[in-house]
Length: 390
Image (cartoon, rainbow, N blue to C red; front, side, top):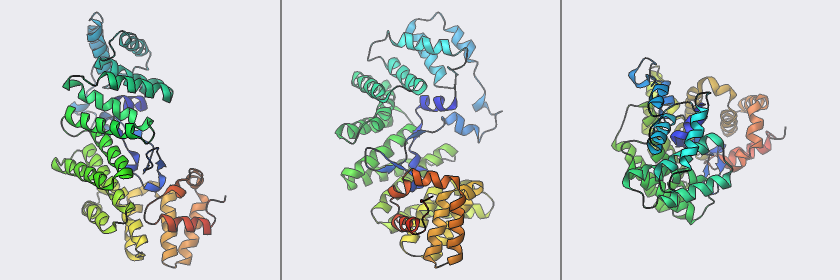
């Protein structure tokens, strides 16, 4: 199965805005600035970049042999085996896999509406087939309602269904209720650290921010505390924890609480910068969103010295992609203008004019939607220097 499909099947969705500069986000129906949800690779695929292929964690299972053993099994046992394989990397879009994908759909259609296996099969279907939004929303609502009184062992599935449904809903009481279902079901139904729970919790906090800032902050604090209560050296867990802190940081920044945002970000950023001095930039890349936030806070304070420090860290974290990043170029333009550096302004303008990505940045409307502390100043510079006029 292609990686994109495998990612969605795993349900390992993480708000992209937790990992990137707010200026590149898109405004969802909730009204909160956040990037369009994208499925991040399943844990297996993320860890594959960090763990040797020879590790026992990545020994391939012989799915063909395992599935052949269940060929004659009763329907529920058979579909469970097929779903287990699909959710753990078996390629249903291969020549051998396509008939088994059809078998899943055929068996699922015979199951009662409140059978958790039917819910799992539907999540698989929307990941693979790309259903129309109305059909996907209708199917998720129906399954979520059917599983209202499902046994405790189905709680995690109910949470996954709610998490898939929430982004398809407009800002409404139903959307908020669905996010509470997602968060509570995943928290109660899945032990340990969980990508889907972190996604649901972040979405819930962002949605609440529109209605009740105090309640939203309580959720952000609880999510950050949840991560900190079980610190881990695992790369995926660290990434998720950083995403939560970055989300809370942006919540504070949007409300002008720069001191609180800086206090939240500085410990991990300072550690990452110290590690980078010793030659390890892994942590600095992980805290890039915080570094970007600190830069824009310094710009809002008109503190060119600290802004320069954070800009250098931003460039170091971006590494090889730094020269292709229009956001970084725009940040350099903003700092040069603040410092009265005419040569720096000219250089940043020339840089922006050569980047293909600048056109994408302008046409996406991201600059107009940006709400970080330096957004207003950046928009003035874009207008003054005709950055988006072609």
